[in-house]
Length: 264
View 1 (tube, helix red, strand yellow):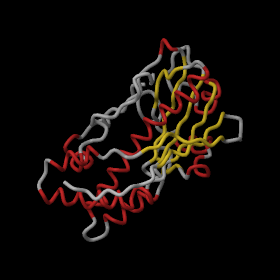
View 2 (view 1 turned 180 degrees about the vertical axis):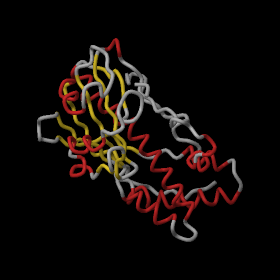
View 3 (view 1 turned 30 degrees about the vertical axis):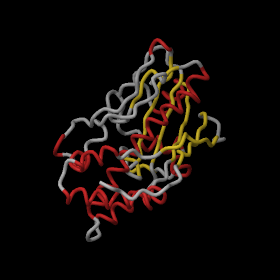
């Protein structure tokens, strides 16, 4: 299937990083990132011509216009001592081993423009599939941002302090409470810095935004960070699965072998 690819200028994640108690926010950038859409392409190669035409239309849209105008990756990274994090988010908000002495809060987003464009396309005659595929692409981009930020945190924060990632925790999963988002947004000043707000206690806006907490401790407790399926996984009933294969389950580029990272 031929897709008319145009040369595009790859983007970096704009990272606003600081230590809790210091209002000064240091700006940094990740390495260059594209959005790997092989999952979509492989899925549609097994379908009929009609489906391949829908994908080709979307890929041309993404390569010519979508990536440059709609994908605006940014992140807010805030570091705490373990005691500071407990005082702010509550005792027992995450379970950590005794070696952990620092907590890193990470909030990342692809920006709201892609979400708005996807909704508009899904409401436009003849562009429904382009809108759906754009939404799936946003989720894939969010995953790839996560992998790059883990690498950034490991190299820029953990290793210089002789620390390793000992765990990753998501609000609403495992031992971590769901109702932390308003506190996350407030403490991180994310609405002003990267345009991420809280909708009630459990949701971030734009929708294609995510938050996690990393615990930093000893090398003996280092763990591998990787994405897992949604819980519960709805398989073939899931729209993402139907449209391109679940990006949470696809074979990933993966993190570098020398990157010690946590199993979600």
